[in-house]
Every structure is written in structure tokens, then in C-alpha cells.
Image (cartoon, rainbow, N blue to C red; front, side, top):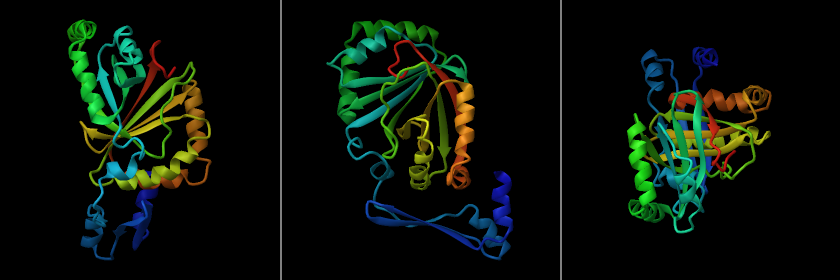
Length: 273
């Protein structure tokens, strides 16, 4: 794939122009390469993007969830199977435990929790205030603190073109693929993946797609489910046989600064089995 990118440049491509329609507005992203060596080199780093007056959170997230649903992704060293489900099942807390996993392959000795807050930031604030008064949660935090090496969280929005994560029967393994994008490329990423997700839905492997609002910015997370590692390999290989997938990879790879993958095993209490 890297070879193909270099070949495309070396063959003297004059210009490429991508046109996207978002909310009735046309957005164009243009890359130009001239015969001048200096201009050719600069074109690899300088992007011409039409000015916008909308945040990408408004353009890319589901309209019914943009202001009322937030996702919190927490990576911790240890996790409790007792306290978290009790919060999930308590109707007084406007939040839902979407899934909770232990890492199998990738960065080891980690737990990942994915929460949904229906009601937006007010719901998140309400949950935090109630947890401060929850004695069981206070004990859990104290015990958890003795085992932690590090802890990180993010507030995320869901891409409008992905399915909303819903409980599913197992057993499954889950892959969380995280991409650190170049600043200013989120719209372009979203438009390519709006087409790509149809290609990757054929085996029902797509669980959810999210982008960060607070925490590490311009970060995207794709969550996938497979029966096992062999199923993962077969499904991913089959995508290359479908029209359009190679083009999506070709154009989105240059948008990425860093990427990582972790394969995770759901905990017994996880709604995503």
C-alpha cells in the first residue's frame, strides 16, 4: 500500500479533488502537485480546505445524539465486576454500561470500560455528583487505587453512519482500533468511512465508531466484534475483495499520525458478550 502511494506521486499526478456534501453544503478538499520541486514538496504538507462555520462534532455525529449522548472510554489497570453493573442497573443514574473488557493482545493488564450518558453533559454531571455520595463506589475507588498503575479517560461522540452499540450474544472477541489523526482531517476521515462502513457491515462485525471531544483530540476509535482470531482474519481479508475498500484505505492512511490495536475479552458482566 505504501508502494502504491509513492507510485501515485512519482507518476506526476497534477491534482486531486475530493467533493463532499454535508448538510446540503459542498466541501472541497484539494491537493495539488506542480512540476516545481519546491511546490511538489510543499504540497505533501500543505492542505487547502474551504473554511467552515460548523464544528465537526455537529457534522459527523448522530443528530439525535450530538447533544444528549456522550461516551466515556476509561482504560484502567483493574476493574470491579460488582460495582459497575450496580450503577448500570440503577435507574437513578442516567448512564449505561455499553461494554467492559480485559485486554488480551495489545497493551497488557488493562481494562476498558465504555459508558453511554443519555442527556449529554448534564447527565454526566449528575452521575458524577451521585457517585461522590455512593459509599460502595467510594470503597471500590479506594481498592482500585491500590492496584492502578495508570488511568485515562475520554469523552466521545458516535459517528452518525455507524450503528449504535447494542448488547449482543457471545462468545465474541472485540478489537478496539484507535487512530490519532492529523489535526484538520476529521471531516475527510468521516466522509471516506461513511462509504466504507457499508463494506464492513456484511458480517455484522462493526460495533461502534467514535471520535474524541475531551481528552486526546482528533482521535478515532473503531470497535469490532469477531467470533475468534481466525474469523477476524477471514473477515478482514474478505473486505479487500469488495469494490471500494482499497480506495478507502489508500486515501485514509495519509490522514493517520499513529494507530494501535488491542484485542479484548468481554467480562462476564459486559452487555457486549
